[in-house]
Structures are given as structure tokens and as C-alpha cells.
Amino acid sequence: MTENTTLKKNSISFGPSGRAVAQEIDDNLLQNLYQHLTMERNASVQYFSISLWFKEKNLNGFSSFFLQESKAEMDHSYKFSDYIIARGQTVNLQQLPAPIQEWKSIEEIISFAFNMESDLTASLQQIYSISDRSADTRTNVFLDPIVDAQINSEDEFATILGKVKFSNNQPSALLILDGELNKK
Ligand SMILES: [Fe+2]
Image 1 (cartoon, rainbow, N blue to C red):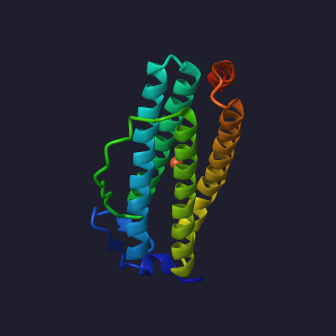
Image 2 (cartoon, rainbow, N blue to C red):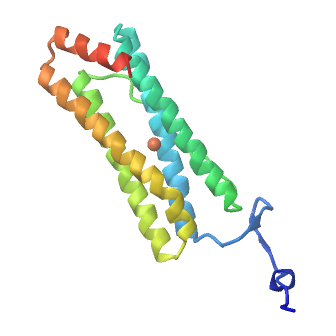
């Protein structure tokens, strides 16, 4: 009969929240996850603020698009906080800056959103390389679909930016784009 080694293994470590920890998480990796969670929450608040800016200008297509984006960023925030808890850690919620509410043009807003998305991707890449270095496969697997979704977001904002630039601030062209975004 073979011996059951699972029963023999009785030293379980517990994290600061009191949950069992299967693999200790590297502290630098954890700090980067906290920082990334802050970036996702910040993006959510920023997109919410942009959604209101468009609504005030009766551009309801842009407004509903940014409201959806705001909700998507909140979903990402849930994913990161759930993951941190699943790894036996407590979630450190950092202070968020007040969202920008004044913009010179639609092009400025979409450029800002594109840059924010590429900053989010850069942050994921950094986490990826840290988890790679600390042989934390769990984190790499967790990040894979998120990196994929980030690439789609960058692509989406690049397309909208291209159309906004092409419209050259002409109201009729912007209204067509507003209608397109409403159907999304
Ligand atoms: Fe996100």
C-alpha cells in the first residue's frame, strides 16, 4: 500500500487575512498588484467622469460607451482584489486622485484614454515579468486573459482616435461616430 503523503503534510501557512496560502506571494509582486488595482479603479472613475462630460454635451453614444468602459474597469478591479484575496492577502485600497473633468476637445479625451490603456498594459507587463522571475505561475495564468483584453482595448481606442482625428472636429462626422458608439 502506498503512503498518503497529503495527510502527512500538516504545516499550512496562513496569510494576514487568516486564509490558507498555497504559495507565498513575493512582496514586490504584491505591491505591484496593489498599484495595478489602484490604476484600474482610477480608470473606472476617470471613464465615469468622461461619460458625464459627453452626456452634458448631448453626445449620448460617447457617454454610454464610456459608462460601459467605466464598468469594465470596475470589473477588472474586482478581478484583482479577488485574486489578492485568493492568494491569502488583504486588499490595500489606495487613495485615488480626483478625475479630470475639463477637456479641450474630444480628440484630447480619446488620446488620454488611449494612453491610460497603454499604461495599464505596461503595468501588466511589469507584473508579468516579476511573477515570471519569482516562478509564480498562478499569477501568470491569472494575467493571460487580462493582457489579451488590454490589447483589444488599445485597439478599440486607436480606432476611435483615428475616426475622431479624421472627423477634424466637424459636428456632422462626430454625430455619426456618436451614433456608432451608441450601438456598441
Ligand atoms: Fe482595465
